[in-house]
Length: 221
Image 1 (spheres, helix red, strand yellow):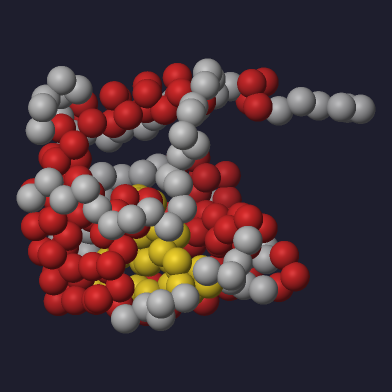
Image 2: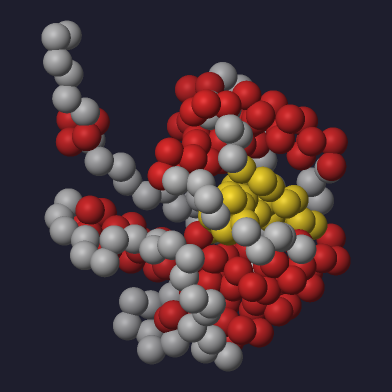
């Protein structure tokens, strides 16, 4: 799979099979991803790769919180700006409606938030979740590095025939995650990335993207 195909086929999958992912594949991907860009070569990310019974226990605890209507732990960073204007709000709303309709959750369902949280806390059935942390002393530049690192990981997963789904949702249950992985107190959970093989015979959602002309300006070309 060449890099263009990997980029084009990468999407947030929300239905994984229970087919296991070998440790050898995970090690190969995560070792190669160390070449991701990093300003000043800080390499500020720290990843916990969780699978097996520890992941099953984490899912049980997080799902119990979700189904109980737990609003989640205090945020360590905002998921989105407090105010989103057009075109960002339009893109967000359109994608959210499309995404959860595909999962069978009606926009007007009064239990929609709980159902969404419960699906997320099960990692959509994925057999592996990568939890990416940064030291709390890091700044915006290092958070950008972590994003480039995770994109590198997700593209390498495609090269291995795997899919993924980045989930900032896990920050809502960061204390529960920390109980399982044993993360140091100075580490901040950036997100989880669910990893696995896509479940067959499920609708394949692919959200749209803004046209390049909306986000790119050529100067001197």
